[in-house]
Image (cartoon, rainbow, N blue to C red; front, side, top):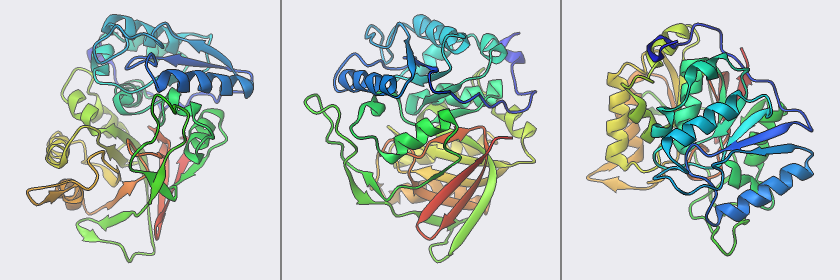
Amino acid sequence: MRMGDIGGYEAMKYPKHIQRGGTIGFVAPSFGCQIEPYYTAFGNAQKKFREMGYQLQLGPNCYAGEGIGISNTPEKCGQELTDYYCSPENDCLISCGGGELMCETMSHVDFERLQAAEPKWYLGYSDNTNMTYLLATICDTASVYGPCAAAFGMEPWHASLKDAFGILTGETKEVHGYDKWEKESLKNEEQPLLPYNTTESRVLKKYLGRQTAEKEPEIRFSGRLLGGCMDCLVNLLGTRFDKTQDFLEKYKEDGIIWFLEACDLNVFAIRRAIWQMEEAGWFQYVKGFLIGRPLCFGQEMMGLDQYQAILSVAGEKNVPVIMDVDLGHLAPMMPIVTGSLAEVRVCDNDITIRYDYR
């Protein structure tokens, strides 16, 4: 099967949930865990998973540091990702971390093998958008946009980590927002296992189109979840891996809930990114937007802030736009099942996402 032939022509596939005693696989298609605080945190995560009764399988790049912007060479990272996804020796995969150049890894992933393999849950975020997004749009396989491996080493686990692992085990059927979020992490080389430093109260920004909806007691919308880190999405847009239009046409009756967050982008780069997605036709069947807190939270440049950057496009769609959602680089993050049908319910300052695996 040529890359150009790959596209979603089957129903969305949902992986089997991992059972107690099953095997969790770890891969490093982006950064590995060779430096602190990730090295110690990843080691503690392994200890915790073993104590919970799970077997572990570590890919060869988990502690590698030979690559530029990723753990190893793109060829070796692509080989590891393909082999471990297709291997019957593990039941799900958790990425070791984000990074900078996972896009180069994807050039060496065998999507024909991935599409033919028994589907399994893949968990990661940030640079891992390159895998979570393409699993959905190329392979019609649901994936989880959520925390990477080292986060599971924290003591104790934040509720968001329980939610994320609960997706893999099948215990989590819906997720809710969390009361507080972390503006500045205290985790460092000396204290690698610290929990999130949640000092800021979550305050959702709600819009219906461009109009503020702060006084709306309840907002509900449903559709199929798609999205990830905008930095990565605009990088994939227009490449041979971009099967977004095929996905949108296949699932247009469901409509799309776009979930978006940004890492390295400033407010102008966010506005450019969402403009590019709009001009590529990605939002033609949008039912609503879930926008995570960007890493540039609070930034204003030449009169533009993070909210107007998004509303410049999203506000013209006359659909709900919910911003400062627990999603992305300013922890904690709700695990988002990419490709899944979902109902979003926003009541006052709380948000619930209920998954529907059809």
